[in-house]
Image (tube, rainbow, N blue to C red):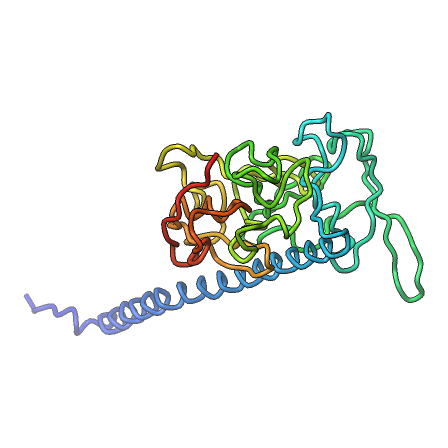
Length: 303
C-alpha cells in the first residue's frame, strides 16, 4: 500500500496557508478592536465633557444675570411633590445657545395630559421672525454613552443631574445645613454660599440610575447621594453599581461649581465623595483635591 503524505496532497499546502491567514487575521483583530473601542470611548467622553462644560457655563451666566443666584431645583407650585414639579432645565434654556421660552403652565404637574402638546416660543433669522414650535430640549442633556429614553409624550430623558447634597432628603434642606449641596428643590443657591470652595464642589454629575424626563423635577434632575451618614461603608456614590456614573468605564464625568469638568473615579473614597457633594466647610482643606485619583480621607460632614 503506497505511503500517503498529507503534505503532498494538492490541498495540503493551501490549507496550511489558509490557517496561517486566519491566525494572522485573529491576531490583527485582537489588536485593532480594543484600539477602535478606546477611540470611540475617547470621543464619547470628549462630547460628554463639552455637554457638561456648556451646562456649567449656562448656569454661571444665569447666576450672573439673576442677582447672584442659581435656579430653583424644582419649578412650580410648592404644594406639589418635587417629582411632580418642573425641572431647573427650563430656567436655563435662554442661556443655552439659540433656544427660546417654553410656553408652560407651571402651576400644573409636569406630566399633566391637558398641557400636551408642550410648546416653545422661539425665533428664526434671515429675516427675523418669532414663532411657536413643539417643545424640544436644548442640545447636550444626554451623555453619548447613554441609551436614548423617552417619556410617553416623546420628551427625552436627561443623564445629567444636579448635586443636591448628602442624603436622600438633601434637596429639601436649607442652604445653611451641613448636608446641603449645590441644588435645592425650594431654594436658590449662590456661589457665595459655597464656603468650602467652588473648585471642589460638584455641580452636575452624569448617571444611568433612575433617569427621568428632562422637564421633570425631583430625582430625575436633582438628587442627593443616598447614604448612611453614621457608618461606613455605604453604597458607593460612583460607578456601575452606584448612584452616579455607570456610563464611562472607571468613573463618571462631572462639572464642578467653578465650571471645570473632571472625571470622578469609581474608587473615590466615600467620605471624599460626600465632601465634594456639600457646599459647607469640610473637615479638611483638601476637599476634592484628588477625585481623579481616588482622593483622600476627609471625614463625613456633620448632620
